[in-house]
Image 1 (cartoon, each protein chain N blue to C red):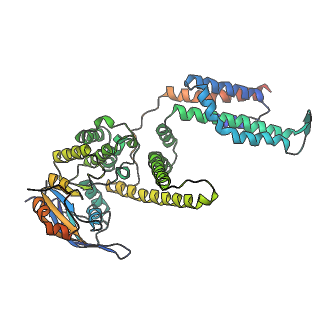
Image 2: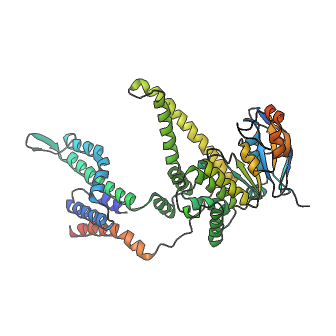
Length: 224
Length: 247
């Protein structure tokens, strides 16, 4: 929800973005997430930043120069917008993933009425990602044990075959898991956690961030 | 007289590709018996097991579990059969698919309609039976293979089965885990069908042994008699491990 507010803010209202960033910093502190951890994890954003940096150089419309370079105003704004909003998005995702376990996120999604089937698929993914990566690792070891080292494009064929084998193995495992599920009476519904009542307090806590952001946004509009 | 736990009459089965796996199997297993199902690879053991709870539809012959006909068309009846025939599959990673051990054990009883405190009680009891109570909230992939096998047994025990069917229960277990599992199986008050290549394990746990070979039952006797009949074993590609003898 916080993100919706952020996205709907125009980049020209730069004061608001400073406010959003300080809100996020505050959340990071409250959630006891080390800033360094958040910073390293945000590195994932870099490709998008590079793209955004290029944007001011290409574009149409109003131009202006800083020293020897000509920049396009629209491009600059769009670029800034991507960097600003992107960074906020990434930071929020980091806060969610470090402060909440994957299981809780799934349970949350279920509560937010995401279709059962999707929640089930995601939870199976969570359960089997280790099994499949282990299998992948064993296959790599088996290849390496027979003297294979992937070094260049000519080895792609072998890697592709291995990937196909992994896919088939995973598919067959899927079938066996399904059999095991049927054997224990599965009929399309996974057991629900007993629905724990979410207290008003938690709701208020959870809504603080988007509420503050929205408030600031609205104040800006009124103020103008 | 009590109905036998399992009664199989003239069961035959061919896979859709025409490969016939079973050629008329007859077998009666009484309540409380522990029976070893022996046979070489490709004898049809797994195919037989898949019939016991209606995963494979019975195309020829009849199977009764506690007197009730296994009928893949009868959805309600099948649900009951599946709670009565508990299959422990060979690879525990196939069997344990829920995020935590506790939830996995709860999966079967939940499908049978248990909820709340009652469900909790069944789960606690099943985990206690296999000595895995303190692992309830752990994800399965953090357990050792032996522990996962034990949890797999618990997931089935939680459904209070009439028959416990184990597919290669001792495979890939270290000697201590193998013995611990044997102790657990011995402590259970349930009919057991154990598919295995582990002859000493069969001898240790089962008083009766059945050999399935090329889709039919070729021997059905006391485990001791079966395992001391060298010709019978040899004819069916079975052998005792070197150094192991039964007096």
